[in-house]
Image 1: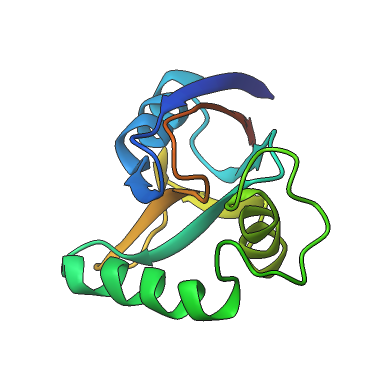
Image 2: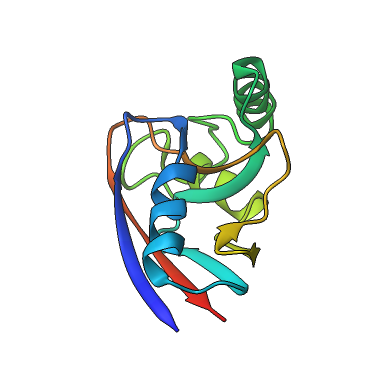
Length: 136
């Protein structure tokens, strides 16, 4: 078992490709075959596997989630940190806080167009922590 925590700086609300950083942890683990588990230590950001070739996919995901969890909804009661506070929690609840990926020959077994993304749901920049556990 190998475990490492990644720190990822976000620019504010965006999908940040973390495939390279996770791949480096997997390679550094020296584990050839097994599983890579990722867990984000936050309630207003999430993890996602999605297409990494066409940036329009990322834009369209943000468009849909803006409709599902709009900022500043007057019905929200939890607004302690501003109008994007509760909407960030909604977005996180509708996505994933952990991912599990297979390893094959010491590499992540991702599809051709798949990438691993940290999805920052808050408008301002943050530093997010992701625990990466590699077992084989």
